[in-house]
Image 1: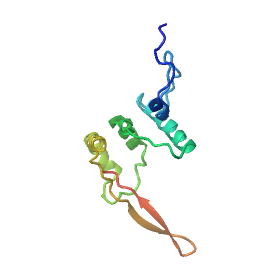
Image 2 (image 1 turned 135 degrees about the horizontal axis):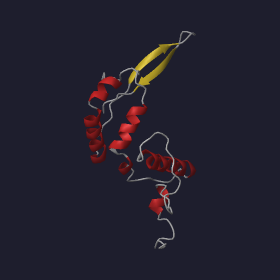
Image 3 (image 1 turned 90 degrees about the horizontal axis):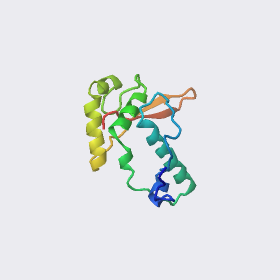
Image 4 (image 1 turned 135 degrees about the vertical axis):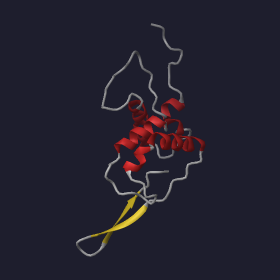
Length: 140
């Protein structure tokens, strides 16, 4: 087998959690698409690095946000959750999810995405006080 020219990871590879593999490595299927597992592994590695080194600065992470990742995230949401400030429920969003997620991904990648504020409601507690609850919007 031909050896790689790179014997050590670059700083960018280390910061983004890339690993050098031989062969196919460990394959696992958690009911997710193939693209989901590597991205989640990278996000976990980034989170660990950030926790270990509070001064570490990350840049160029938007390439991890793909249509496939956004679609997977959408399908992990609770389908019976309340609508956010935009009034869009999971069922309504699902009708046009492919087009909406494609547009959302384009907006994120281009820097045009501006998140909408969450809807805040208050839930009464037994002691008479209220607990604030933020409900984020589905549509960006």
